Structure formats: structure tokens, C-alpha cells
Image (cartoon, rainbow, N blue to C red; front, top):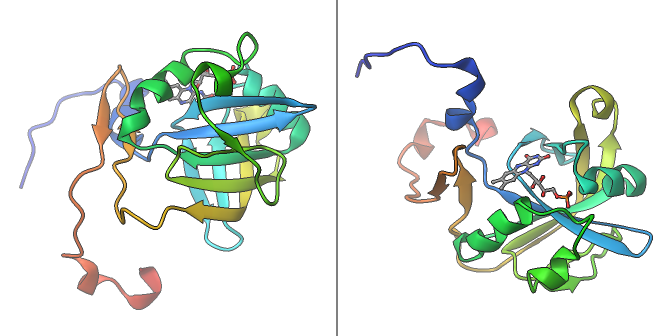
Length: 185
Ligand SMILES: Cc1cc2nc3c(=O)[nH]c(=O)nc-3n(C[C@H](O)[C@H](O)[C@H](O)COP(=O)(O)O)c2cc1C
């Protein structure tokens, strides 16, 4: 298939590339907890399990995570979409987001940041590399413990396309599985 294409503003290519699931990042420091919504994350390595996260320096979470060097990446599903947007449009500087959005903090095993019980999965993270924080606000975390719901197998995750538009995860298929080399699966 050949597409007829036109020039597209480079600052908007995120609309096509930014389709990883939206996550909620929970954090804690000196008795305070917080949550932020995050779409700009990137898997960087299998083992150790590394994930790069862009956390803007204007966010309260930035201060908490920079000081505590830990967080939990929580995976919300479609039923939490309203809360996900509201969390992303408020700051923990002014409110307690766990209380305001009636979310349940659950103790993590390896970090002090709490898990969000209502999320499908929770990934406990420790800061692995802070060398990109100063330049890009990117924290490279190692996932040190993962908690994932037993079912459903394919959660309805939410994916941000920019400009207020979301995509809900849809069809799953193994149709092209046989084309992979075993090491590439
Ligand atoms: C869909 C969505 C995606 C977002 N993605 C990011 C992101 O990747 N990085 C970031 O720094 N902020 C992102 N934000 C904005 C933060 O969630 C927002 O600034 C939040 O209120 C910060 O909270 P805090 O000040 O309590 O840390 C996103 C917001 C929304 C609604």
C-alpha cells in the first residue's frame, strides 16, 4: 500500500509515536505521597529491567523522586481514565491525590513509594541512572519488583495521542509470531 503524504509539523510526531500505555507514577518522601500521570516513558533494557521516564522538573513528583530516588509505575485501565486525566491536571503541591481521587495506597515490597491498588499492574522502581535528569528530565529506573493481575490477560490500557485524544488498547493477535526469530520474541 502506498500513502499520499503531506508535510507534518515535527513537534506533533508524538501523535504517532506516543502510544505506550499511560501510567500513574506514585512516589513518597518524608511522609508525603504523590501521583502523576505519565505518557513519556521508554523501555531501555530487558535485564536489568530498565525504563526511562520523562518527569518534568516543574512537577512536584520531580522533587519527590529526585530526593527519594524511587517510584512505582502503576498501569491503569480504561475504567480509571477520568481519574488519570484529573491526576494529570492537578499538582500534589496543593492536594493529597490519593485522598482526592479515592485511590488506595498499598505498601510496596522493595521501595517506600506506595502501590496504587486499583491499577492492573505495579512496577516498583529504583533510580538506576540520573545522568539524563539535568539535561532531559529523564530518570532511568530499574524495575526491582513487579505485581501483575492474573486476569484479564489483555487489560484495556489507555494510550495518549495528544490534543485530548486517547486510544484504548484493542485487538490482540499472534498472527505474525512465526516470523520472529526465537531470540527476538
Ligand atoms: C495524558 C497525560 C500524560 C502526561 N504525561 C506526562 C509525562 O510524560 N511527563 C510529565 O512530566 N508530565 C506528564 N503529564 C503531566 C503531569 O501528569 C502533570 O503535570 C501532573 O499534574 C504533575 O503532578 P505533580 O505536580 O503532583 O507531580 C501528563 C498528563 C496527562 C494528562
